[in-house]
Amino acid sequence: MKFPKFHGLLLHAADDLLVVSIPQRLVVQNRPLAVTLWSVQIALLISMMVYIFTWQVWLQSHTPTASIVEFTAVDAAGEEGFTNQQSKHCDSPHAYWYNHSTGLAFMPQTCEELSAFEAVRLQGGHAFIPTNVRERLSWVQVGGTCNKEDNVPCTTMLGPKASTSGNCGCSLDRAFFAKNPEQQQIALHHSFTVDASHHQRDRIVSAGTVSNKGLQVRKHGSEEFKHEMLTLVRNVHGSTCTIGGRSTWTQDKAMHGIVGTLADWLVCSGISLDGNPGVHVGGEKNVASHFRTMGVTLQLTLSYHNRHAQLGTHDTLCEVTVESKVRWTAQPATHDQVAIPRGNRTLKAERWRHEHGVLLSTVVTGDYRVFSWNTIIVTVVELFVLFQIPPFFIQLIALYGLGTLSEMYRRVREKKLNIYSHFHCGIARMMVAEIGFRGLLGGIWKTSTAGSFRMSRAHVANHMRELFFVEFKNGTMTDEDLARISGVVYSHLLANPSSRGITCRDFVEACTHEDAFNFRLVTRILKDQDLERASPIQRMFMQNVSQLRHSMSEGTGSFQIDMSEDLDDCSREVTETVGEERELPQAVPDLHSPTGKGGVVKPLVLAPPTARENCIHLETTLLQ
Image 1 (cartoon, rainbow, N blue to C red):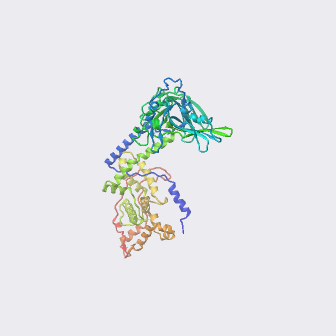
Image 2 (image 1 turned 120 degrees about the vertical axis):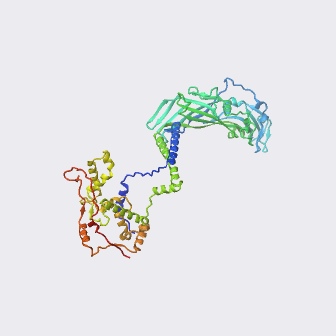
Image 3 (image 1 turned 90 degrees about the vertical axis):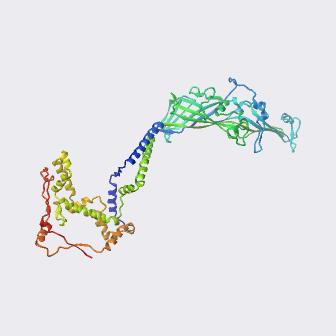
């Protein structure tokens, strides 16, 4: 398999890479489409400006996380308004009874006051307040015989019961409500941490209600800064709630916690322990008739913002939203066991407890925003992409939605090239350029111009004067300007700088320089040696060239120039003259001459061909 030479590949790569690409636009003059496009883009621009300044897109958003979010229990003794009053659930506990579909029965008999340790169970960011308790107490003696002294615990627990093994043992099942759990004081302490460096951990900010000092940690160290936090308590509808007598907690008020009773948090969520859960879940089955029986979850969502309309003089705003989650809420069952050895016997006391109640849980979220160049760059790129959408749809309409007009637009927009189908078009353009050269020389239509006639610099200047006639007339161009311009055009049209004038070949090559078909490429693509030296892979992709050569091989004839021997004297004389190189007279001094001075360009008048020149003719014969 043969491949192109490496040197040739480098040359082609250099031609393709060492360039600057400038896109070319096709502009369609269609006012309705233009008005539609500009209207959409202006509307889009206005919308983007509103979006940019409303959302402040130059600020990067970060989501805070919980640093310290916890509950503490406050001793209610001595608190104003605290009463150990009897309520409905204590007066009529049977009204709260419920039989679950699983066969589990909730049948509290009385109310009992729980100890401070049992009244609130704290676990990190959660607090659990029992409302409905079910427990089993048991006492058993392992070893020995049952006697009267051993019956005392059982008598206390309402009756002894001897096991089949002869050991003493008894048990008691109890169910009761906690007395007045709504009056339990709960304090909420909260603080946040946010990585404001886009996960690079270069700027970590922490602040909370415990202190009016915030902490900023960077790679090179940490520093404290003054920080004031404002805490607002709201319900799920956005209305403010009163917790501990206030709904707005400033930094100094919340330093020891946001303190309020369980009743305050329940009211903020829109329920009470004596309320019916079925009302909140659309009459769903398997829910008790009271929250006090089945329990409930209060979810406190803490949302931190450093840019908010209600911040005022504060640095950070924390919105605490209280929401109730209707579901059976219970703590894992607890099992307490105590074993007391007595000689050869062991007394073992056990307690199993199941508690339903109110669970306070927390979720931390928010929007902490800082200035970021990355966000600005991303926003600009997104807006740039968005602004490409209206022109895209307008282009679709122009190219495919306007019938025949769209077909015309597509023909102008797309340039298709097929070596086989467009070969004759390229040759035709060369022929038109050759005819143009003949016309520029004054109309040489019957004489060969190949190597015989040359266009001088004066001739170029003469035609450029005609081109820039308006500029000469209004004075924006002078003869000296024309001399310089014509000198540049003349030198660039010359393929050989040492030549005495511009030949027909030079002119045609200039006209077809940017064309896909020119003398060099047409000659190379038609050489049989190129196709023979091509590799199989190259031949597979050169079907158009093979088809073109096959079509040429099947041609029926070709052109041949035949100068007849019996030409008359006039023809022979003129033919001898044609053999000499002819040049139009110089009307402009050469600017590249040693004098370096330009002259005045005189209009050049070309006389039509003489009778003797008309005698020159070429006979062409089509060989069949």
